[in-house]
Each structure stands twice: as C-alpha cells, then as structure tokens.
Image (tube, rainbow, N blue to C red):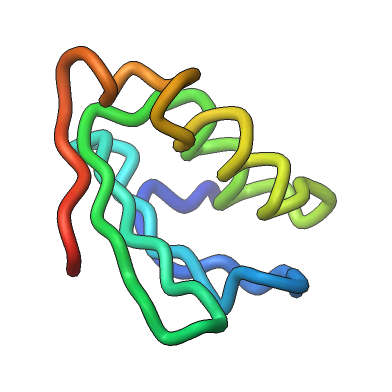
Length: 82
C-alpha cells in the first residue's frame, strides 16, 4: 500500500521529520534546530518518493527539491513558518 500523506521515518543529521501531502503538493519540514517550514507547490513525484521509499535521503530531498534556488515553490509556491 502506498502512502499519499504522512510522516517519514528516515533519520537525518539536520532534519527531525517531514510531513508530506502528495495530493496537495505541500510538505512541512521540522529541522533539528527547532524551526519548521511549510513548503507549497512541491514536486508530487519527489514527495511520493520520499514518503514511500525508505532509502531516500531526507537531506537530499530538501537540498534538491525544497531549497529556494532549485524548487518550483520559488516561482509558484510559498515558504512559511509552520
């Protein structure tokens, strides 16, 4: 059974957890320093992959799909404190 929304279970050195919603294209990232950000208009394919593939690196996901310079939300979505 595939997950279309929920939390990840992978461990990371700087990410505490990620909640993703594939249908809406949104995710909330809780960092280990205590901050949390909500990202909108995130790649649904990337969200699906990070939620359903336990081998996916959370750091790679954030650096590739959520950083301001590289992601779709820089042009079409928003980043807010969650």
